[in-house]
Length: 303
Image 1 (cartoon, rainbow, N blue to C red):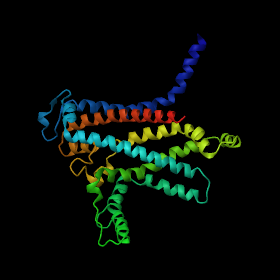
Image 2 (cartoon, one colour):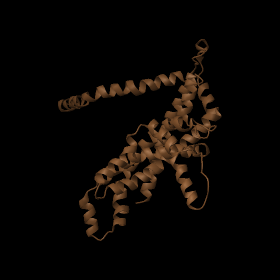
Image 3 (cartoon, helix red, strand yellow):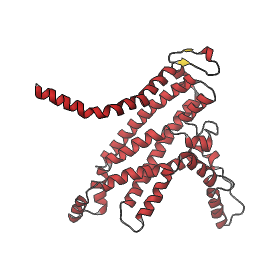
């Protein structure tokens, strides 16, 4: 009995340094969520404070029945899966490239990481004005040169942002998030024992067989981590939408976080904004779990 009590005391001592971090985490995450949940049950417009009243779940009903919010939900899911899929695929290819030894690898790695170090608003402004601008953007300039190369005359002024707003948001997001995926997958590649790979090569396995049978299964947990973290961050991001399209034209590129911003700071409906925020949290949990299971099924089918 004394041995058991001593063991419990030792376990408490080991956990003791973790308590401050746990308390801080609860203060910073759980308490604000509870407050948001409470606010979501009130009709609360800052312009009419005297009309604030308890509304149960009416705000959630209003949010779900709103056409703009439903369009934002659809766009959020499409944008999240598109950005996560392409950034993960490109990150895998770049990680395989950087895992090889070649002259100037350090410089190439630094250049590939750079997009992730740029703030999202700066990235969005760069893509909006330098790449997508119909008057002086690189995209239209390149298309004009190709057009003239084949005998055409005049200038191509293709307003890519207005015609394909969701793609105009997805492309710079993929550009910025690919280095994040690449770093996680590269860590997985470099954690693989070279002795095992050399033994497989000695036994007669070629590079393709080694990658499919050994390297790819080893990367499963790293790809899953990249997909889950990417999904959690991207579904909540609104910098590119706010900077490039502001949700337009119409509702073609609006997403839930941007709709929450409009509800909060344009309509001043705090209760509806809080309800939409709770929906974003639920959506994040659902999407991240779905992405995790989908990735797990896909990777297990490759075994």
